[in-house]
Image (tube, rainbow, N blue to C red; front, side, top):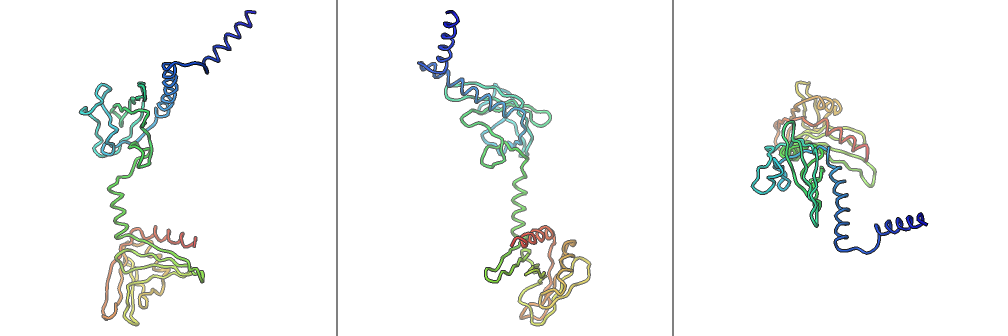
Length: 274
Protein backbone atom coordinates (compact mmCIF):
# COMPACT_ATOMS: atom_id res chain seq x y z
CA UNK A 1 0.00 0.00 0.00
CA UNK A 2 2.82 2.44 0.87
CA UNK A 3 4.51 1.63 -2.41
CA UNK A 4 1.37 2.47 -4.32
CA UNK A 5 0.92 5.76 -2.45
CA UNK A 6 4.56 6.68 -3.04
CA UNK A 7 4.26 6.08 -6.77
CA UNK A 8 1.02 8.04 -6.87
CA UNK A 9 2.63 10.95 -5.03
CA UNK A 10 5.65 10.93 -7.37
CA UNK A 11 3.35 10.86 -10.37
CA UNK A 12 1.45 13.84 -8.97
CA UNK A 13 4.65 15.83 -8.39
CA UNK A 14 5.94 15.02 -11.86
CA UNK A 15 2.65 16.06 -13.43
CA UNK A 16 2.57 19.23 -11.34
CA UNK A 17 6.07 20.19 -12.57
CA UNK A 18 4.89 20.31 -16.19
CA UNK A 19 1.23 21.21 -15.97
CA UNK A 20 -1.37 22.64 -13.64
CA UNK A 21 -2.17 25.98 -12.09
CA UNK A 22 0.48 28.71 -12.20
CA UNK A 23 0.59 32.05 -10.47
CA UNK A 24 2.03 35.08 -12.31
CA UNK A 25 5.15 34.65 -10.19
CA UNK A 26 5.41 31.00 -11.25
CA UNK A 27 5.15 32.04 -14.89
CA UNK A 28 7.77 34.74 -14.43
CA UNK A 29 10.16 32.31 -12.74
CA UNK A 30 9.60 29.80 -15.52
CA UNK A 31 10.38 32.38 -18.22
CA UNK A 32 13.50 33.52 -16.40
CA UNK A 33 14.75 29.95 -16.04
CA UNK A 34 14.15 29.17 -19.70
CA UNK A 35 15.86 32.37 -20.78
CA UNK A 36 18.76 31.70 -18.41
CA UNK A 37 19.42 28.42 -20.20
CA UNK A 38 19.41 30.17 -23.58
CA UNK A 39 21.73 32.89 -22.30
CA UNK A 40 24.15 30.36 -20.83
CA UNK A 41 24.25 28.57 -24.19
CA UNK A 42 24.99 31.90 -25.87
CA UNK A 43 27.83 32.64 -23.42
CA UNK A 44 29.29 29.17 -23.97
CA UNK A 45 29.18 29.72 -27.74
CA UNK A 46 31.23 32.93 -27.41
CA UNK A 47 33.81 32.05 -24.75
CA UNK A 48 37.10 30.94 -26.26
CA UNK A 49 36.44 32.52 -29.64
CA UNK A 50 38.70 35.07 -31.33
CA UNK A 51 37.42 38.11 -33.21
CA UNK A 52 38.95 41.15 -34.91
CA UNK A 53 38.03 44.51 -33.41
CA UNK A 54 38.47 48.08 -34.67
CA UNK A 55 37.29 50.77 -32.26
CA UNK A 56 36.73 53.22 -35.14
CA UNK A 57 34.23 50.81 -36.73
CA UNK A 58 32.36 50.10 -33.46
CA UNK A 59 30.31 53.10 -32.39
CA UNK A 60 28.05 51.22 -29.97
CA UNK A 61 30.09 48.19 -28.87
CA UNK A 62 32.77 49.69 -26.65
CA UNK A 63 35.45 47.96 -24.57
CA UNK A 64 35.82 49.29 -21.01
CA UNK A 65 38.70 48.85 -18.52
CA UNK A 66 36.56 47.40 -15.69
CA UNK A 67 32.97 46.45 -14.86
CA UNK A 68 32.38 49.43 -12.55
CA UNK A 69 32.95 51.99 -15.33
CA UNK A 70 30.83 50.95 -18.31
CA UNK A 71 28.75 54.03 -19.07
CA UNK A 72 28.91 57.20 -21.14
CA UNK A 73 32.00 59.21 -20.24
CA UNK A 74 34.03 56.21 -19.06
CA UNK A 75 37.39 55.37 -20.61
CA UNK A 76 37.17 53.11 -23.65
CA UNK A 77 39.78 51.08 -25.52
CA UNK A 78 41.14 52.55 -28.77
CA UNK A 79 42.82 50.51 -31.50
CA UNK A 80 43.90 53.67 -33.38
CA UNK A 81 42.05 52.61 -36.49
CA UNK A 82 43.68 49.18 -36.70
CA UNK A 83 42.06 45.77 -36.34
CA UNK A 84 43.27 43.89 -33.25
CA UNK A 85 42.55 40.29 -32.25
CA UNK A 86 40.47 39.85 -29.10
CA UNK A 87 39.64 36.66 -27.22
CA UNK A 88 36.42 36.19 -25.25
CA UNK A 89 37.74 34.69 -22.00
CA UNK A 90 34.60 34.51 -19.85
CA UNK A 91 31.07 35.84 -19.48
CA UNK A 92 28.76 36.73 -16.60
CA UNK A 93 24.97 36.97 -16.77
CA UNK A 94 22.66 39.41 -14.98
CA UNK A 95 18.92 38.76 -15.37
CA UNK A 96 16.27 41.45 -15.61
CA UNK A 97 12.55 41.11 -16.20
CA UNK A 98 12.62 41.45 -19.96
CA UNK A 99 16.22 40.74 -20.94
CA UNK A 100 19.49 39.21 -19.78
CA UNK A 101 22.65 41.30 -19.63
CA UNK A 102 25.99 39.65 -20.35
CA UNK A 103 29.40 41.08 -19.50
CA UNK A 104 32.31 39.48 -21.34
CA UNK A 105 35.87 39.64 -20.13
CA UNK A 106 38.17 39.84 -23.14
CA UNK A 107 41.87 39.76 -23.88
CA UNK A 108 43.10 42.34 -26.38
CA UNK A 109 46.28 41.54 -28.24
CA UNK A 110 49.06 40.12 -26.09
CA UNK A 111 48.82 42.26 -22.95
CA UNK A 112 45.57 44.24 -22.57
CA UNK A 113 42.30 43.18 -20.99
CA UNK A 114 38.86 44.75 -20.94
CA UNK A 115 35.12 44.22 -20.64
CA UNK A 116 32.21 44.60 -23.00
CA UNK A 117 28.51 44.51 -22.22
CA UNK A 118 25.67 43.18 -24.37
CA UNK A 119 22.12 41.91 -23.88
CA UNK A 120 19.97 39.12 -25.25
CA UNK A 121 17.62 41.42 -27.18
CA UNK A 122 20.49 42.33 -29.55
CA UNK A 123 23.38 40.05 -28.61
CA UNK A 124 26.91 40.68 -29.74
CA UNK A 125 27.86 38.49 -32.72
CA UNK A 126 31.06 37.56 -34.57
CA UNK A 127 30.53 37.76 -38.31
CA UNK A 128 32.20 38.92 -41.54
CA UNK A 129 28.87 40.30 -42.74
CA UNK A 130 29.16 44.10 -42.98
CA UNK A 131 25.63 44.48 -41.63
CA UNK A 132 26.09 42.32 -38.51
CA UNK A 133 28.04 44.01 -35.72
CA UNK A 134 31.67 45.00 -35.80
CA UNK A 135 33.43 41.91 -34.41
CA UNK A 136 34.86 40.16 -37.46
CA UNK A 137 35.71 36.48 -37.77
CA UNK A 138 38.61 37.26 -40.14
CA UNK A 139 40.90 40.25 -40.26
CA UNK A 140 39.39 42.70 -42.78
CA UNK A 141 41.41 44.41 -45.48
CA UNK A 142 41.70 48.14 -44.94
CA UNK A 143 38.83 49.88 -46.70
CA UNK A 144 41.09 52.64 -47.97
CA UNK A 145 43.36 50.24 -49.86
CA UNK A 146 40.39 48.27 -51.19
CA UNK A 147 38.67 51.41 -52.48
CA UNK A 148 41.92 52.73 -53.93
CA UNK A 149 42.58 49.45 -55.72
CA UNK A 150 39.03 49.39 -57.10
CA UNK A 151 39.40 52.93 -58.45
CA UNK A 152 42.76 52.07 -60.02
CA UNK A 153 41.26 48.98 -61.64
CA UNK A 154 38.35 50.97 -63.06
CA UNK A 155 40.39 53.93 -64.31
CA UNK A 156 43.67 52.30 -65.30
CA UNK A 157 43.40 48.52 -64.97
CA UNK A 158 42.93 45.69 -67.43
CA UNK A 159 39.40 44.59 -68.25
CA UNK A 160 37.89 42.16 -70.73
CA UNK A 161 34.58 41.32 -72.37
CA UNK A 162 33.41 38.09 -73.98
CA UNK A 163 30.45 37.09 -76.12
CA UNK A 164 29.07 34.26 -78.22
CA UNK A 165 27.14 35.05 -81.37
CA UNK A 166 23.60 33.68 -81.09
CA UNK A 167 23.31 33.09 -84.85
CA UNK A 168 26.61 31.60 -86.02
CA UNK A 169 28.06 30.45 -82.67
CA UNK A 170 31.31 32.40 -83.04
CA UNK A 171 33.14 33.12 -79.78
CA UNK A 172 35.28 36.14 -78.95
CA UNK A 173 36.97 37.88 -76.03
CA UNK A 174 38.90 41.14 -75.93
CA UNK A 175 41.26 42.45 -73.23
CA UNK A 176 42.12 46.14 -72.95
CA UNK A 177 43.82 48.47 -70.52
CA UNK A 178 41.96 51.73 -69.92
CA UNK A 179 43.45 54.84 -71.56
CA UNK A 180 45.86 52.81 -73.68
CA UNK A 181 46.37 52.00 -77.38
CA UNK A 182 46.70 48.24 -76.86
CA UNK A 183 44.15 45.44 -77.10
CA UNK A 184 44.52 41.64 -77.00
CA UNK A 185 41.81 39.35 -78.31
CA UNK A 186 40.79 35.85 -79.30
CA UNK A 187 38.22 35.09 -81.99
CA UNK A 188 37.23 31.48 -82.73
CA UNK A 189 40.56 30.27 -81.38
CA UNK A 190 42.70 32.83 -83.23
CA UNK A 191 44.65 35.33 -81.12
CA UNK A 192 45.21 38.96 -82.02
CA UNK A 193 47.22 41.88 -80.70
CA UNK A 194 45.97 45.24 -81.88
CA UNK A 195 47.69 48.63 -81.56
CA UNK A 196 46.02 52.01 -81.97
CA UNK A 197 42.86 53.11 -83.82
CA UNK A 198 41.75 54.81 -87.07
CA UNK A 199 44.93 53.79 -88.85
CA UNK A 200 46.41 55.61 -91.78
CA UNK A 201 45.79 53.39 -94.85
CA UNK A 202 48.45 50.73 -95.48
CA UNK A 203 50.54 52.01 -92.55
CA UNK A 204 52.85 49.94 -90.38
CA UNK A 205 52.30 49.45 -86.64
CA UNK A 206 54.70 48.09 -84.03
CA UNK A 207 54.81 46.85 -80.44
CA UNK A 208 57.95 46.38 -78.35
CA UNK A 209 57.98 44.68 -74.94
CA UNK A 210 60.75 45.97 -72.65
CA UNK A 211 64.06 45.54 -74.51
CA UNK A 212 62.83 42.78 -76.85
CA UNK A 213 62.94 43.02 -80.63
CA UNK A 214 60.04 45.07 -82.03
CA UNK A 215 57.09 43.09 -83.43
CA UNK A 216 55.58 44.68 -86.51
CA UNK A 217 52.06 44.66 -87.86
CA UNK A 218 49.82 46.10 -90.54
CA UNK A 219 47.31 48.83 -89.70
CA UNK A 220 47.49 47.93 -86.00
CA UNK A 221 47.21 44.15 -86.29
CA UNK A 222 50.33 42.25 -85.14
CA UNK A 223 51.77 39.68 -87.54
CA UNK A 224 52.82 37.35 -84.69
CA UNK A 225 50.28 37.87 -81.88
CA UNK A 226 51.19 34.74 -79.89
CA UNK A 227 54.81 35.91 -79.65
CA UNK A 228 53.69 39.34 -78.47
CA UNK A 229 51.34 37.88 -75.85
CA UNK A 230 54.04 35.62 -74.40
CA UNK A 231 56.40 38.59 -74.09
CA UNK A 232 53.65 40.67 -72.48
CA UNK A 233 53.11 37.98 -69.84
CA UNK A 234 56.74 38.31 -68.77
CA UNK A 235 57.18 42.01 -69.45
CA UNK A 236 56.73 45.27 -67.59
CA UNK A 237 56.18 47.89 -70.30
CA UNK A 238 54.77 47.66 -73.82
CA UNK A 239 55.83 50.42 -76.23
CA UNK A 240 53.44 51.06 -79.13
CA UNK A 241 53.66 53.00 -82.39
CA UNK A 242 51.17 53.53 -85.21
CA UNK A 243 49.92 56.21 -87.61
CA UNK A 244 46.44 57.62 -87.07
CA UNK A 245 44.30 58.98 -89.88
CA UNK A 246 44.42 61.62 -91.29
CA UNK A 247 47.96 62.44 -90.13
CA UNK A 248 50.88 60.54 -91.61
CA UNK A 249 53.10 60.63 -88.53
CA UNK A 250 53.84 58.35 -85.59
CA UNK A 251 51.64 58.08 -82.50
CA UNK A 252 53.78 56.62 -79.69
CA UNK A 253 52.53 55.20 -76.40
CA UNK A 254 53.51 53.19 -73.33
CA UNK A 255 51.36 50.59 -71.59
CA UNK A 256 51.99 49.32 -68.05
CA UNK A 257 51.71 45.50 -68.11
CA UNK A 258 51.03 45.17 -64.38
CA UNK A 259 48.14 42.75 -63.91
CA UNK A 260 48.07 41.70 -67.58
CA UNK A 261 48.85 38.02 -67.00
CA UNK A 262 46.16 37.58 -64.34
CA UNK A 263 43.45 39.23 -66.46
CA UNK A 264 44.56 37.40 -69.60
CA UNK A 265 44.24 34.06 -67.80
CA UNK A 266 40.81 35.08 -66.47
CA UNK A 267 39.73 35.99 -69.98
CA UNK A 268 40.87 32.65 -71.38
CA UNK A 269 38.95 30.77 -68.67
CA UNK A 270 35.85 32.79 -69.53
CA UNK A 271 36.38 32.07 -73.23
CA UNK A 272 36.38 28.33 -72.55
CA UNK A 273 32.97 28.63 -70.88
CA UNK A 274 31.32 30.30 -73.89
